[in-house]
Image (cartoon, rainbow, N blue to C red; front, top):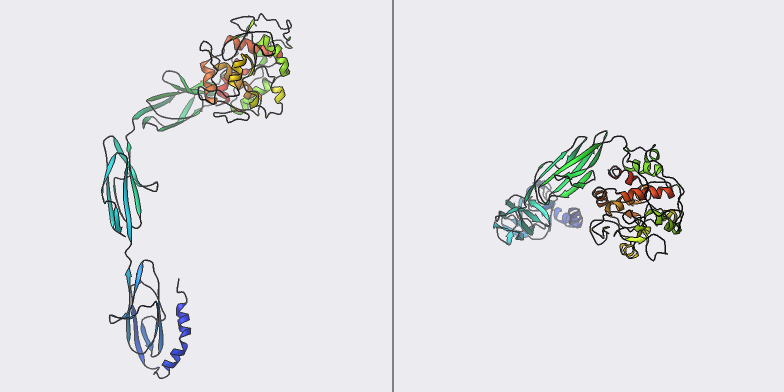
Length: 497
């Protein structure tokens, strides 16, 4: 308090005065003392409470300053005795004193601003005394609704009628919003699992719908499909903002024993071991034999580890040597004796001429596995190399893949051919084969590639074709390993479940 210990100080300063004035006083004489004031308005310190005291008693009175009240003075019989904050006197007669304080009336500015299609009636903008009742009533225009009263971005109330007493400068915004279109949403699931999250109902346009699919024991989640059987997402967690009436089906499938595709006979006219084409090291192993120890029931990271174990590369070729292998591996089935160029389907001469006619495209770009300790070895993995037109290779750069976006690359330069599934299955192979690589939705660089959701969809939209099957078998003759995602495309969904 501003005047803390003031009464003690005053008493010490006036000891000599008390002595002099008490010298002739009759100590047996008694006088009444009373001090009246409003405790809610005046902050007072007094040395003696109301009562009867000996003549000569020193009475000290102090008044503390207050921001909300003005001290008017000390009065006796309506006469001003003192307007000082510090007052003392010697009691030598009956004394009745009154301290008067007056409340300070604060004035505050009030403003109401309307944002949107509507109006507010009631108290108008202006300056008002503290405690004045402010009354507001909001009315929205047709096609809009009242969103609420806000101050400094904080919602005060969403009720149209708002009444309060002003105690500070107050700036309020009344917000109105357009009524949003409403759309129906429904989600169902097939046998083998269930879906949690947003329930069936009617929702405003833009409302976020969030779903989580959970497979039961013995089943796997296949994806969310629309009413036209189109795959919408293969991620078990799926969120979107509703923009139209939406019907989704969460599909599950049994986690059955592995079903092997049929073995086929290799077709080629370019004979390895002749005309500069490297002779293979391995024979093609029957699919059932190759995957005889493979556990196809796993999911997620456990499946990734299992694929890596089963499909581990037995033999790497130096990057420069792979050119003389691709002459056999990438032979076109449509134009035998020519190579099948990725992204545009170009027919390319099969013999390697130092990259004048064709060069080698890293589907998972070299620059996006530079952090691998065995980068120089991985560079020659022929499952990741495809013959390409030099100009096409250059234009692709090292962009990740997606349906659209300037930061991404769309692999179908020729509408007559579809490389989306080819690309997706090679990317899945690289991700499973090399544990430090990462496959994400929004790759930022380094060892990351994507776009995961588009690749998963491409895997379904562009099924495995005969060229991929032939190529997978031919690579296995050199490296001794297969791309499991060409043999079993559905593994991609289990890998990223």
